[in-house]
Amino acid sequence: MKVTSTDAWVESFELTRPYTIAYKTFDSVQNVIVKIQTDRGMIGVGAAAPVADVTGETFQTCKRCLIDGQLDWLIGKDIRELPALCRENRRRNAATPAAGAAVDMALHDLSAQGLGVSLVDMLGRVHQTLPTSITIGIKSLPETLAEAEEYLGRGFRILKVKLGQSLEEDLERLHKLREKVGKEIRIRVDPNQGYSRQEVSEFVEATQHVDIELLEQPMKAEDVQGMRNLPEKVRRLLVADESLLTDRDALSLVSPPKACGVFNIKLMKCGGIHSALRIATVAELADVELMWGCMDESRISIAAALHAALSCPATRYLDLDGSFDLGRDVVEGGFILEDGFMRPTEQSGLGVHLQE
View 1 (cartoon, rainbow, N blue to C red):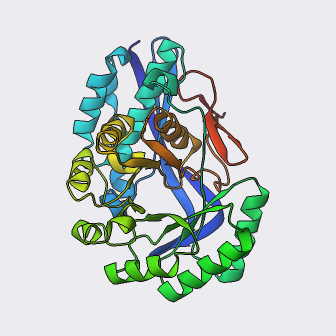
View 2: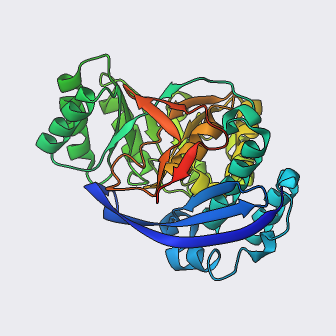
């Protein structure tokens, strides 16, 4: 099971629905696709979607780590030595986690294919299926309500709403949204570091009757002490996203008093499945719940995150909607979406197949 060839290239994807978060608007995205082939004819694939604002890894830096022979170190390596390969990949891409994630998931894809099982079963399946949220960007109130109605019509029952530009407008949107969708629909919010600690307190007080399920990274990523200074009942709602990049961050966040009740693991932040599972172990030991999130990504990396998520006992939440609004993709398969619930296919590896 030795690697015989590697390849990587850039794919540009238009978004069918541009969206706005607290500090940026997106209408297209670029991924770097990785392809690794073995002497048994198996092909493993990965995808990188770097987030420069969070990790400092620009798209150009990510690309340079993957193309023009940068993956030649894998030639001749035995896929059966997966842990050692993941450690070497982690060392090489310590400063470029999305690049590392693309290689990592391709290696995991091949390893599970070699065993003839799905990746989630190779990792040790815990959950069969879980519902994902779907995201509403920062929009006007009428647009927010119309988009929510569309998503409910498509079977989704968990809405994640982007906030963070104006607390007053955010509160109005959420109250009207709750009136519109009723009590049965779960609402999560993500201010993307847009609030001060005082605004977080005001938000929680003003939304007591809105029934907010989770409050994702409301304050600046570096203000972990500010998170710790919030009341415990608030901290239980908090999801650490930009504050959580590595397993060391995970250890820091759970040191008493815990800064949050939920970790948001994104493969593009931490460097892939190998590193994600280290964070997941910290969460399990510290009684912290897991959310698995994403950027705008190919089905390749969404499938990789789903397989990893369903193998972790601490997983409670999915936010894996990153491929839903891509105008096209380079693969098919990977997962099945039914009424907002996601599950992997039963094919070996990631279960994705490159399109011609």
